[in-house]
Amino acid sequence: MRGEDGRGAGLWPSIPAIFRVMTGWFLTGIGVLNLAVELDGGLTPAYVVFHVVLLLAGMLLLTRHRLSPSRAGWLIAALLAAAGMGLGMLAGGGYPFPRRPVADLVFWCCAAVLLRTVIALVERRLPERRTPVDLSRYATPDRTGENVGGLT
Image (tube, rainbow, N blue to C red; front, side):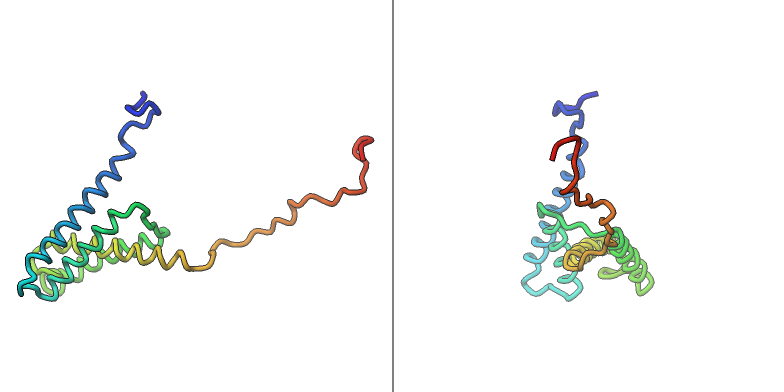
């Protein structure tokens, strides 16, 4: 079954990109709007941290060249989101907003996006981690003096 683009792929490969861009614009918009509205003195440290993290995560989701870490980086970021959410609930109903689990989940997922990007940047600067392979057995021997079927 061929897709709408004539290559057989259809629109399905673009769905994650559309979701990423829409989420990025939503988070960026909420972060900027809420920081701008509360500039008249209603800003608390938790409020500022929450909306700056939303703003930065939204901006990262909008970047064209995303940085993707290794599997270990993804695991560390996922563990941050789960641990932050769990410890926040144990410490007093949630962080940064007590008794608002959805807002806390959004905050910790955005923090995981930021950590994932930092890990990817650090991994880019690390030296190559692959094990070197000895390719000497694949080298062709020196045949300069051989006669190849009468051709020299």
